Length: 306
Image (tube, rainbow, N blue to C red; front, side, top):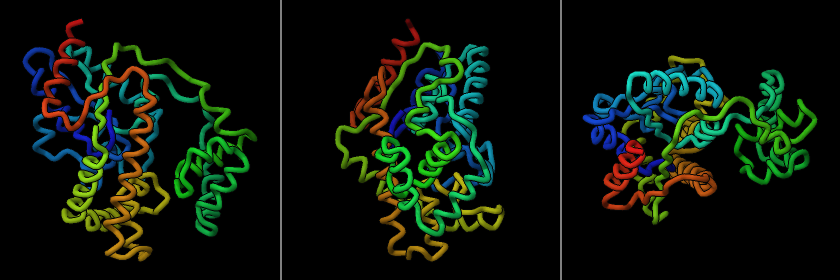
């Protein structure tokens, strides 16, 4: 586990190669953006050479017009883990979507299903009044949840309001009612956390600039030609694509795009690190450690030998 740009993929590939001759590992991606086909540049999807060295499961499984949930991830991951272990191998789950890790490890909060009609109504209201106005409404109905969300966090504000309006209660009161079973495996949980936050910010900034240079905007233009996309889709809310969409719609100019993308990615990393600080049982590894791969390999070897 770890924030974006912390080196998770490189470390995972190193571990796959390190244990290939003794206890083969297979990577399962835990990333809510890598599931989308055609969204390669803005998700920092592993390239063909990397995937040849260490194949990844749960990459390129749906089109950008579709939705993928934590519940579906849990079902898919459990099926893959059962198959991998049945073949005498060990699943290696790698990513930064902490909600997916939480769903897999502890079960899902037993929340009502979404209401498409109400969701469309909320999106229409947001288009007219703006998401900060809906955030203010959420603050009246569910102050605890609203306090955790940024005023422009459209996806989470929408879901929280949807729950308030359909159940008559607060999302915060519903959370914690678990449904389903926990994870039936013995875990080694490694968290990549940088000892110097400025190092991570620099990597994020450089990587987003590289995405723009590699054709992020052009990639999104191609996706818009091939698919019936709109700004409210989960795929188009992904960091990087949301800002590229705003640029193509004329909401921001070419000079604003890099700064907007870097800032949004930094906010994503901040949220991921907040999750990790409260994650019980994780072994924290410093991304900056020169012997990071050796430290991780030693932990994995000890875990496999127990």
